[in-house]
Every structure is written in structure tokens, then in C-alpha cells.
Image 1 (cartoon, helix red, strand yellow):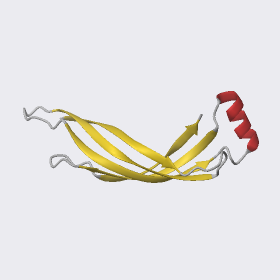
Image 2 (cartoon, rainbow, N blue to C red):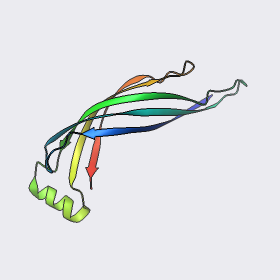
Image 3 (cartoon, rainbow, N blue to C red):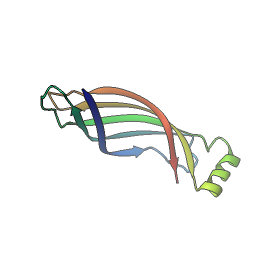
Length: 115
């Protein structure tokens, strides 16, 4: 038995960013999701094709390039990067399928870049 899930998300993000070198930028996002499912079964039963759902998220961006002017200058002149952020996010996702439930709470961290 092999199980593969491919999540597809489409949504909007609103960042509360008022200045060019803002240290912190909170944001919210939300939208729809579809999780495509592929099952390779050896028992002959049919598999579910996917599950539709929705998500909502809130997070905080911490601007690394605002902490040091020399680093900000180098990132901008050599790579075209205006802001380099560390992103912290909480996301709630729910699916509407009765057969497959991918509803979950997700805490994530990553890097975001503004060009």
C-alpha cells in the first residue's frame, strides 16, 4: 500500500507593512485548498481522488535586513533583495470530505524574500 498526498493552495495574504525597513510585519492569509490523493492498493479497492477544504493563517515576519544597514545594502546591490524576513506562522486547515480528513493545526517557520 502506497499513499501520496499533493496539497494545492490558492489564497490571499495581507501584510501590515507601512515602511520600507520595518522590523516586524504581522500578516493574515486565507483561502481554499485541495489535497490530491493517489493510492496504490493491492487489495483491489478503489481510492479517493482528493479532499477540498479551506485554511486560515496568521503570522509574523521579522526583518533581518533592517538590523544591519551594510547587509541590507549588499543584499540590494548584489542580489536585488529589498528585505530578508524570518517568517513564523500558525495555520488552521480543514477539509470537507467525510472519507479523508486532513484537518490540522500547523506551526511553521521559514524565510521570505522581497525583490
